[in-house]
Length: 197
Picture 1 (cartoon, rainbow, N blue to C red):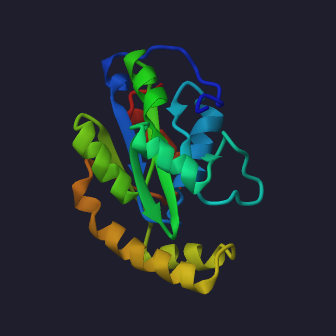
Picture 2 (picture 1 turned 180 degrees about the vertical axis):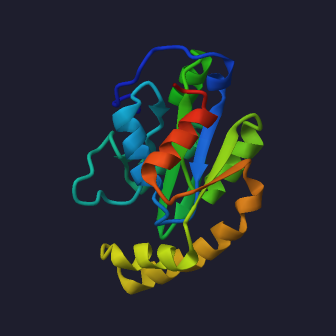
């Protein structure tokens, strides 16, 4: 079910056997960074999360997310199929365990894009993981991005802003912070941390 995205099969030294987690507040640009890495560096395997939220326009099952209903998500949790999962803005998100473990075993560089709750769960279950916090250039810029999306009702935006404050305060829990002033620069820094050339 979870192996719909093509991956590279090259092996890149011991550092790339380490799982890298990219997290940060909603609206900071995590999805944009991940899309650029997927485009420019296909040998980095990007885990595709499973979610109960409906697809947004332009999203494809198995590419941005695996879209499941609540019963399907419950089944994955009960069967221990998720490495981590969290609820956010009324929907649940999780990382399928098996594809991540298989690629790490093969020595492939693996990147997860998950929220703070998920990053904390990964820290507990895989303490060797590298946790990278993506920060906005400023709070004002983050507010502009969150309110400028126009895809969510005002109460959801308010919840996202409240959550973003909590997430920003958790920055110190991460191993590295990258400030998203330029998607290209962030991608280059992230790939350097993952020892991908």
